[in-house]
Every structure is written in structure tokens, then in C-alpha cells.
Length: 372
Image (cartoon, rainbow, N blue to C red; front, side, top):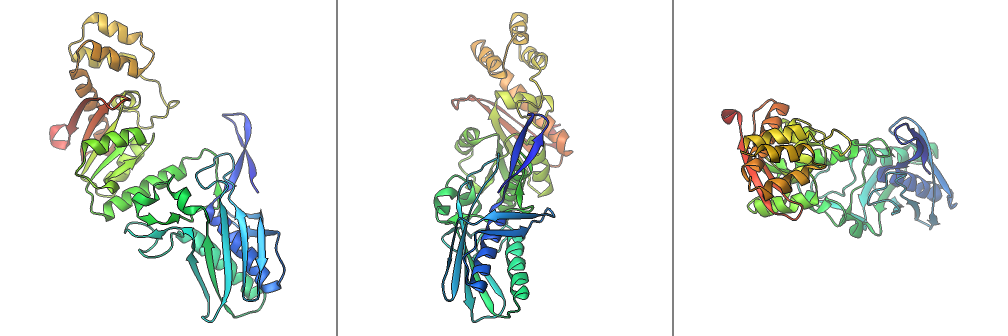
């Protein structure tokens, strides 16, 4: 149920997987086909938004007098997420009402906050999967020449437990996972899904009235950010991962007035240099640049020489603490703020806070257009 793509960087074949939306569509088609024919289905072929067909194996299919149910096992390919291996179940029932109605059952979340592409109160089945499921069902009904109305319910038995591994709760999706996917496929190691989650989280933050957001490089730095900004609501905290520049630009686009960056020496040493994609393979730490900041903070020549021979940015941070050069960290934060303002062309206030891995506060700085 997965396809293979060739990754020239890793010199191996990577399997593409399928989104929860594609799995739900295939399950719905199998269940409806079973209801129409009275026969259990073992596979279902659907047309994906990327413009090609895909055939899904049906794990289980049951047919009753007025309803049928089919199950697809979610396969994330070689880029598995929290939903990998989940049962996606579609139950199709004849309805007295004309047309096709779609809802979420057990393990599919409900939207409780504004800012998501699904209205408050509805099941968290995003627009593209919703369209895929209903159009596939209506085409099948037309093919069989019936005008009967149907009700489709998508369920994920373990969805509520799986959702604990996601940001759904913070986004206001309660009770389970979301049925997602704009392309139907999951491309191994693609960045598009992560970027989409950043935009979605920012939309929720803005819809919740947040004009000050805290962007962090991961869960640990987010915890430190929450401790530093206890007055902010949970929606204001966004995990940007390595996508610093992308997140900053989205903040400005959405009208955020103040952005606080919270992180640690390794990635923020790169941000200070103006590197806005801070993956470990994106760019090396410039130790000459760190030596320059140390010199500006009053470091002796012997210390700056040690920096030039360092292996990691964290090691440099340890050197600065040992030398009692606390101004180094504030200076580094200031360079981060300046780089961020350059990235977005100004128009927002940016602050940067730096922590050790264990959560020790090292320094901070604040910049806006006026302080440039």
C-alpha cells in the first residue's frame, strides 16, 4: 500500500505512505461498495489529489442490512507519524435524508477553537479529505444508479490516545485525531507537513487573540518559554523546529506584533549568523563569528583562541560561563533579533532568550525597528 521513491541524498528507496484522508476515503468506498453489492470488499481503488490512482488493502469488511463497515490500516511509509498503523474505519448507513452526510465517530476529534479550516463544532475532517470522501461516495452512488441518501462516519479506535502525541489539544481539537491530507500521499522526510502545522498553530493563536507568540526549536525550549512567559495562553507557544525564517515570515504575514524566540546555543548560534534554516546539516556554526561576539563581550585573546578550536556551540557557551562572560549571551541574543528583523523586513518586535539544555537562563535581548 506504499510506493517507492528514490532519495539521491540517502541512496536508497523510500516508501511513500498515505494520509489519513486517503485511508478514510478508501475505507468509505469499500464500505459503500459492500453496502451496494452485499459483498465484502478486500481492496479499494481511489483517485488521489496528486492526480493518480492508488489501491488500498481492506483489513476488515462487514456488511449488514442497512449498513456496512470497512477498515484500512494507515501506512506512513518511511516517514511514519503518530497515526502510522492506526485503524481508519468507515461506517456507511442508508439514510432517510437525501445526499451524503459525513461525520466523525470515536477517535476523530471535534473542533472547539476558531482558526482551523473546519468550523467549530464539526468533526476534524479537513476540507480536502472531506471532499475526497463525499465525491468518491457520490460517484459510486451514481454508478449504481441509486438516489438513496447515505451517512458516512469515520472512526479511529485508538484516536484519542494517538492525539496525545500531537498538538491537537492545543489547537482545540478534542477527543481524537484529525483526518488530514491535501495530496493524499505522505512524502518521506518532506518539510511541507511540518510547515503546514506551523501555519495552522499560528492561525489558531491569532484567532484566539494572541498578538504575542513564543516560537521555540522544540519541546524542551518550549517548556522553558512557558516558564518565562506564564501570562501567555497555551495557544501562543509554537514549535517551529528548524524553520526559523519561515515561521518569522508567517508571524509577520498574520499580523503578530511581538515574537519571542526561545532556544539554545546550537541552533541560535546559527540564527545569530543569519542562518534561518537551522537543521544540523544546513550550515556549520561559525566559530570565528562566536569569537567576535566573545571579544565584544570583553573576552581575552586566550579565550577567543579557545573558541576557534571548539567543537560545538554548547562548548563555547560553557567556556563563556566559566570565564564569567555573561554579556556574551545577551550579545548573541541581540544578533539573533537583528537577523530576525532583517529576515522579515522589520515591522514587528522580536525578543530572543537563550537557555542551557538543563533550563538555566543565559541571556536575552529585545529589538524592534526603533531600536535597530
